Image (cartoon, rainbow, N blue to C red; front, side):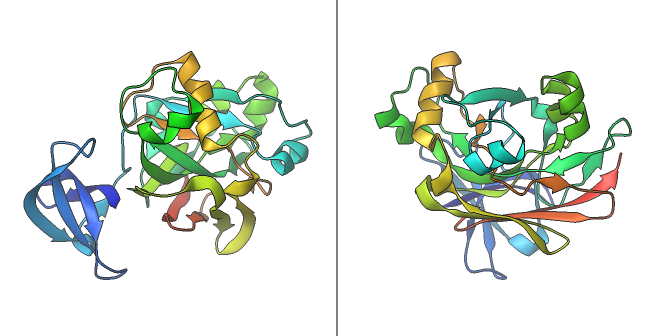
Length: 256
C-alpha cells in the first residue's frame, strides 16, 4: 500500500494511491493512516492533486556515517555504534517543494537516504520486534550545509535549516528494506548509486538503538544514512532520489 498526503480541491487529506503510473487514483483515508485505516469513499485522480510530505513527524532522527564508503569520503572511520542526531520538524517538505539555500552557507550538499516511518508509540523495542512498529518506508534527502557542519563541530545548524528534509513521494508499506537500490541524481547526472544492503547498522538495529534513547511516536521518521557520492547543489538545479519499490523524490533548488 502507498500512503500519501495530498492537497486536493477541498483541502488536505491522507490517501492511498491506487493504480498504475500515469493513471493513479487517490482514495481518501478517514482521520489518519495508522492502525487499520478506513476510507471516506472520496477519490481524485492523483494528477489533479498536489503531493505533500507524506507525514508531519514530531521528530526526525538521523544516523550519521552508516555506510562505510560515505564515512571514508568524509575522512573518518565507520562508527562501531549508530551515531544519531536530529533535524527539526520544520525542515520537512514534500516532493516538488523547493530546497531553499541559506545566504550564510557557501556549500550545501544532497544526501539521498532511506527513511523509516514509525507506526505506533514505542519504547525499548527489541530488534526482533522492530518491524512491528514500522508503518512503512519513504525517501529522504538529508540536505546539509557542509561548511557550517565543519565550522560548528556539531550538526544542528547545518542540518536544521527550513526545507532541509524533503520526504516522499509517499509511504510504502510491506517493504523489506534489506536490499533496496538507492540512486541520487542532480539535473539527471547520477551522483549516488548504492544499496541499503550496505548499511552498517540495519533498520531493526537502528529502531532498537533509537528507541532505547527516546519514545517514538506515530509518524516519527528515522533517516538511515547516506552512501558515498554526496556533493553540492546550487540554485537552479534539481535533485532526485530514487529507491527501488518506493519511487522518486524530486525537489528543485532555489536561493532562500
